[in-house]
Image 1 (spheres, rainbow, N blue to C red):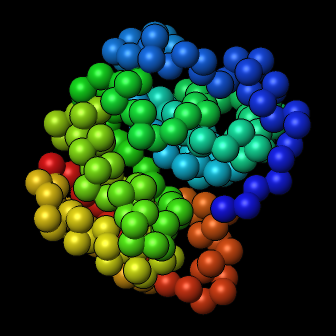
Image 2: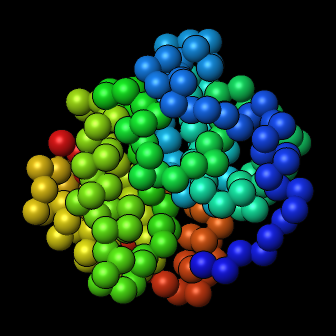
Length: 212
């Protein structure tokens, strides 16, 4: 991924009340950030934040965390947040590989993975956010009844993801290879920026929901 460097991004993130610093210190006490005991949902690789900000606006009784490792991308979401603050949403500029360092077992109720980097080369398979290595990390932070929802337009990544689930202890709760023509799974669907772009080009959107 080639990203344009935005010099203002890092300082803005460091100064923002919406971007959580030293997240390891919040492990096990994340609900104190929000001042309630509502469930916590996290989107990993949230991009510019459209998806998770709409979710947070529609569901005030759920707390959300948007995780994005690239500060120049997160900066765009932060600008939106400053224009339209949401009390139940916070951001993390961190690598998802560190999830178990930031959250206790059971602290997260749902994980969203939307249009993740496919890392197409075989030697990079373990970096894919639906790899067995990442599934193990999710297992360390999700509640017993927690779920993962994954959307992509990349058929190869989707097939890989289904295979990883099949070879793990995870269960496939729902699956579609054409989300926008699946009345059940598309109900209440919130599109990301990428989803809108790819679907407008005629690309089918793939989705799966998994649990343990």
